[in-house]
Length: 206
Ligand code: GLN
Image (cartoon, rainbow, N blue to C red; front, side):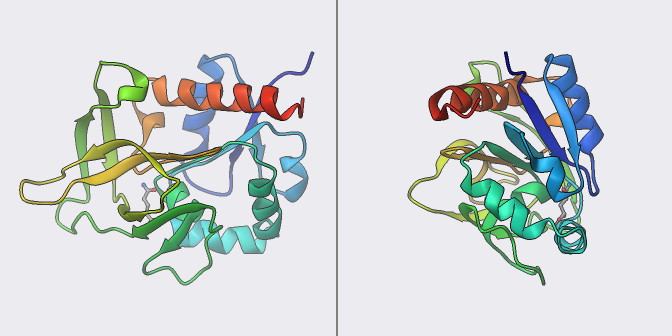
């Protein structure tokens, strides 16, 4: 019997917090720092941190093309905050190419300079009736989504501001502009683990 293993890109940022939640859910994790580390993974999380640093380190560690190839395998990938930027088709104000995987347009650091961080209780029907308490830290704004992208949750950050998607899914790809790994609610991680286990079954890759 094969054990499900989820990789966490461990170049920078809060990868250990993701590993801790997955560990609590009984899922095997692996830190990814080299192309070899991607081998045999059933899914991957790209954590929060700083997207410019991620993109630079992905190039320095020769991970950029292997990550693009990993996207094409159809294995589930979840980007949180900076990880969402790295996955996006287009991100403003970023001097590096993204993985151009998830069909969304991102405005970096666009929730306003004065309030870099905020928290909100989100309605997320896919996770049940209980609201999800979300922590946003210099979060990216999703300014546009392609036709294949399902919006799992939205937020209106300030009165008068337009409602923006903050949790999205496109087939095997998932992104949240907030940090579920920093709160005690594992439902987004469980949702992702379900995506990983069901995609393994349907693709017959395990
Ligand atoms: N502001 C960061 C960026 O643009 C993202 C912040 C985060 O991941 N918490 O990359």
